[in-house]
Image (cartoon, rainbow, N blue to C red; front, side, top):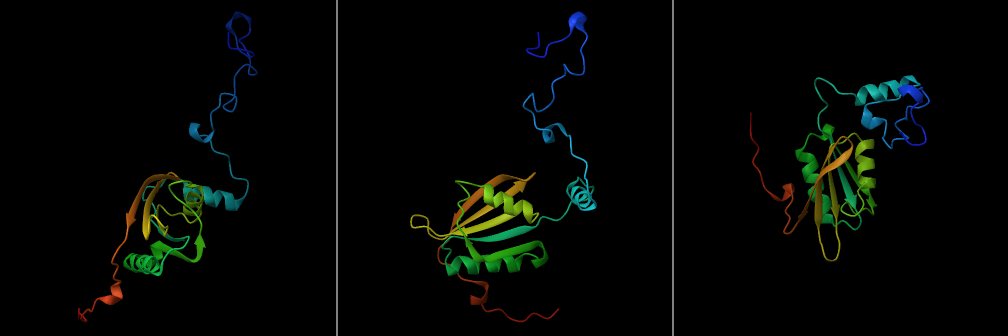
Length: 166
């Protein structure tokens, strides 16, 4: 007996007797079922997200958290300058009141929106002063989170360097 939608007599089943994925509590995406795009823009987006022989380069985003100190902003600018500027984006104008270890939703949303697989989030709290959170994404979800505290920061511009001829 299959419950309220059972098999017909004699072991034969009708198309009405087969339960759908939603009735079984499964998401279509987990079964590999994708909607067909209705517009050209939708088709372009799905082709961009599809698996490729040679994957896109890993891009990163640098996000300023609530009450991030000037030292943290300088650190993020230095890390951004060490990485290829085409592969990273800075979000330092607006302070985001997010807490990655409590609710990762807004950070995941921004990373997916910017197509970034790496992110850095700076914050400053009374008990955890000058924190930097590194995170990795996989399949549009958080894979790893690492939290580092910073003390005695010296920026790149604080070090004197000699001009090197090539």
